[in-house]
Image (tube, rainbow, N blue to C red; front, side, top):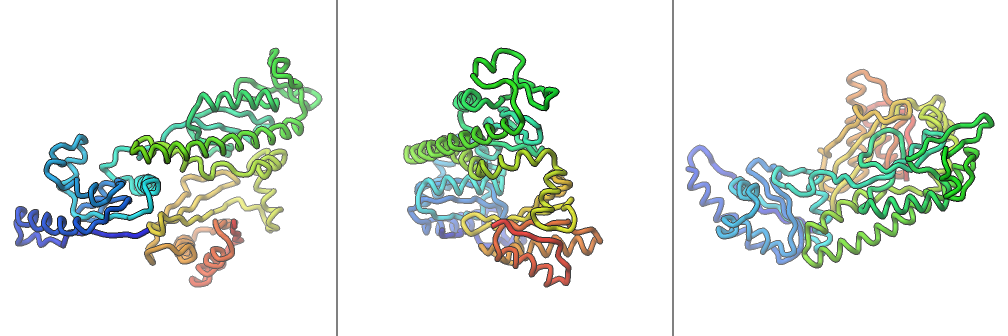
Length: 402
């Protein structure tokens, strides 16, 4: 993915009048706009301070970007925000991609990352329906909701069509005998669970009193079914997005793109998830299980997890999430911009952010976490350990997720 930058020259505000500056800027920018390729891509409008004002996509960068600077175009712009933005533009940066679909995807990522002032579309997350499964409950139930919370529950989705989702959940209930959110199961004296207080058990054709282990076995099959159905829906959404982009229905394509990005990575293997259900009754149990699995001397009551991400080899950033006693500690979350280099190098980025985090904790005389989790394989783990070594710090237990 190539990057081309178009910048107006630095302006001497002390001796140059506004009129002269405007004319010089206009002439220079026009010359550089002529060098733009007839190719698909994204463009970023910037002000004189380098701040990103607007991110857009184009089937033809030369035609699209150039049209913003035509008097007729500017006079007839339908969106007042764009008209107000244009006098502030002093720099245009473009990224050439292979096709329109890539342009749509990259545009969405950049908007979500930079949240430009003059972008009105796709900045806010869409509240598509989700499916919540509270695995801390003895008898977990599938519940439709609109908001994802850091509550330890398992979330599926989001899904594009609530009607199809509700029909699928009704099918899951009838096929596997699991519960939705419209009933309250009750524990019986013999340890079994009564699922319904009415005739629905007979209607659905499943036993109304079940052992927890049997219910969790049925739940595992239900989760697998939901994941398979979700994969089918994702394939259909990708086809719809591609068709919308080819037909130049960019708003629709971008909406589908945003939904697909939220769906990616949501569904982990059902077997790995549900086999743990009988053991994970609460966060403390999970922490104890983690201690045993990793052979730690003490339970990891505090954990910090690092991840590196980038967009098309550019805009590298890092995030850190923190857990206290097995539950998310959102106040302890941190976000890092990579400062020591420009480009895409996960190892260098991991070494930088781990070093910055723990040299600061050391300087502030704060305790290190009981466990550090690195999103990556052996290379990323070695980079993190190298950060501790470089600063003369003793690392806490540290693992990688390959």
